[in-house]
Image: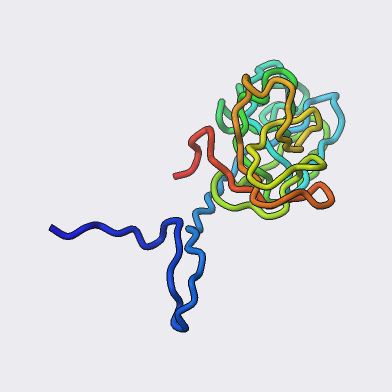
Amino acid sequence: MSKVQRIDGVGTRRDSSGNELANLPEREQSIRLFAYAHKTGGAVTITAGDALALEYRSAKNITDPDNPSSSKGAVAHFGFSNVVVPLITTDELEKFPCGIAKETVTIADGDFAIIDIQVAGKFENANVASGLAVGKKVFASGTAGRLDATAADIDEQTCLAVALEAESSNKADVYLLDPMNLAE
C-alpha cells in the first residue's frame, strides 16, 4: 500500500538548484456579501483591509428597494449570513467575524452595496492595532474594522486570523481562519 503524500501542504521542498523553499498553500477564499449604511446613520466607508462581521441585528434599516419611501431591515431583506458590517467590540459583533474587505466602498445613508470579502488564506495589509506581534491571534477591537490581539473580553470573542508579521503603520499580513465556515 502506498502512502498518500500532500504536496501542497505546509512544509518545505527543494527547487531545481537544491535550495529548500517554504511550501505554503495558497488557499485564498473570497465571497461577496451585502454591506449597508443604516438609514439616518449617515454614509459608511469600508476600506480595503478592514475586518468585517456578519450582521445579525434586525433593527438596522435600509431604504426599502421595492418601496423607496419606507424602510426595511437589512437582515430581513437580504437574510442572515448575507449582510456584513465593520467588525467591532460592540453589540456582540465580535462573536461574528467573517473576513476582511478586499476593496474600498462608500455606501450612502440608507443604501447598500455588494462587497468582496476574503474569508480564508493569506491577506496582505490588514487593518491592525499598533504593536501587533507576529504569531498573535487577532480579534475585534474597539475601533471599527481594526484587528487586535489584546481585546478586553478575548475569552468571549471568535478569532478571525493569525498575524504573519509585526504591525507597521497599522498594517500587517494575516492568515484568515474562516471562523464562520463561509469558504467553499
